[in-house]
Amino acid sequence: MTAEIMEGIRTIEREKGIEAGTLVAALEDALLAAYKKTPGASRHAEVILDEEGDFRVFSIEIPADLEERLVDEAREAAIDELERIEEETGERQHTLISDADLELDWAQVPEELMVRADATPEGFGRIAAMTAKQVIQQRIREAERMMMYDEYIDRQGEVVTGIVQQAGDRNNVLVDLGRVEALLPRSEQVDGERYEQGSRIKAVITEVRSGTKGPQVILSRRDPELIKTLFELEVPEIADGLVEIRGVAREPGYRSKIAVESHTQGVDPVGACVGPRGSRVRMVVSELRGEKIDIIPWNSEPARFVAKALSPARVREVYIDDDTREATVVVPDDQLALAIGKEGLNARLAARLTGWKVDIQSDTEFAKAEAEAAYAGEDDTQEFSGRCAAMLTNGKRCPNAALPGSHYCGVPAHQELHGTAPPAELPEDDAADEIDEAVAEVITEVAEAEAVLDAIVEDAVAAGQLSVEEGVALEEAIEHAAAEVADEEIAAAVAEEEESPDA
Image (tube, helix red, strand yellow):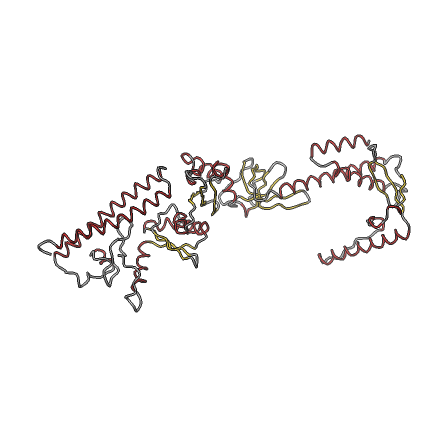
């Protein structure tokens, strides 16, 4: 019988991965419990696996006075434990304490005072064998549960793949992870997603609980870590460390924004995540059941980062307040709804991604507020913006300087925006009208040329011929050059009109 048991222990060790020492200790406890049920069993005994591979039972005798003291101490410890449980639960304990069930502190007994004798019965019998079998099976299950708990407790935050086992009740979706069944609760499911039985899904392990039937693993499909891991699986540059995901902002089921940075010159982080013809990001979107993803280039300059975070909307200007961490973003009038997004979703995600409070204003709203701030108050001479507040048809701000006492330039159409007549100091004859028309024509031509150049740059960025950073720099250079050209052309046009005979 002993040879069969030992062979079974070695088999379990190979198949279950449970150490033989754990099983031997469990078997010794089981045999000791079986021995104490036999008639005439010694009060104190132990079961030891001897050198020949046989289990032997040894009775233990100690001096009576020492035994009495150890029993009293063990009884007091048991009573204290029951009282502690009563205080914690508030319920009275009715457990009977028997001296035979008390665990003595054998560490207080010197080895020389112990008298051991071989008390192994002729055979444990059928009851002893069945008791040993039951206890061994229980210990094996406990060891397996502990091993699985130790395995999954270290995997919190990891993305795993499982098969949906039960999806009839959306409040509790069971997912088979192989060795354990995990739970996807309703609070961690994505609105609009359906989990069909037998389908394969990826989810994040958010919590591992220890239960009587094994570890209970809690999964999540809403965790931002899911997007990070999916991109690591699809983008080799991220897995190799060439590209890093600096931040993730997610509204599960609707839209997500990720900020990426390249650590290697020549590697475009956005292009690497998008992939050839969008193949890489398409795989991630497919796994997320159609959730839209915006890939934003990370920038150390807050203004540029906030501007890019509002993608796909185009941003005109960004004003940063470092003290309050607030960013005022100015966008063209036709881009205002796109920048804010449906129910404020785009702006909300941009604020989460950047960590800045974002206030979005249209060009018209900002120009009006700036003009009122520049010229309001008792002291009208304290002016901080001398530029015309009018907006051109291409969405750009008028490059002309504002007239004294006004926040618009001398172009009549711009003066009419504020509901004011042309300033008194301007001549109201035909020559003045010609000058105004010439200035307006120059501004329109420069604005149209600037719009054409901006469109060319945007097409080049979209086609991958220019990086996003190069495109932004080129657009800024175009705007600066257009302002200089406008000033020169306006000066030349005015001079030409003034030299005419009718001026």
